[in-house]
Image (cartoon, rainbow, N blue to C red; front, side, top):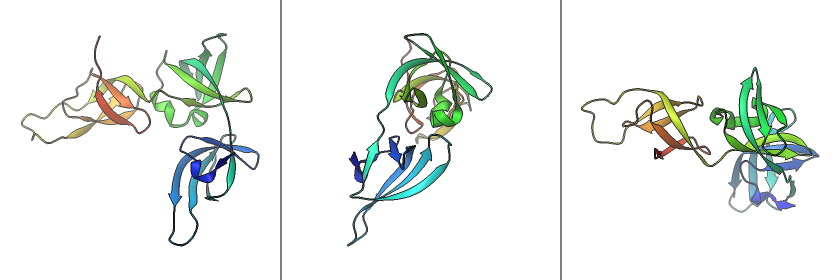
Length: 188
């Protein structure tokens, strides 16, 4: 059991016997009143979202998940197919189950799949990934020396803002938690 003030984004909690993923969390401390935790929760089963306000002294049950390393193989219609690296069993997950991480999936990527009672409930991407830029605008000649950013489409389909010196074919490191450009990746 955890206090409501220990809730963090991405955490899975059990509320009224149902699994919820915390999509957003904000601690509210109004003047003389007790603190509250305002959350946006997504039901793991149905995918529906709801908002809930917890009192700071409220106790919640955190779901402990089994983490299994799997390799993303391919996408088939609305399903994403993963393979367990230990027993080679294949598993299908929907985009709703995967969440925002779907925009970083490229074939042969090894990720951690979160399981609860033997069924997948989400994925845990690495904090940063190296991805190739497949489309972006060319650099403007004579542009000012200020830091200008432009959109770039990555090989996974994600769109991130990159500095103007990045060109098509460059491999960049992206922070998967907040979709931010970190640096140009070192080529081997």
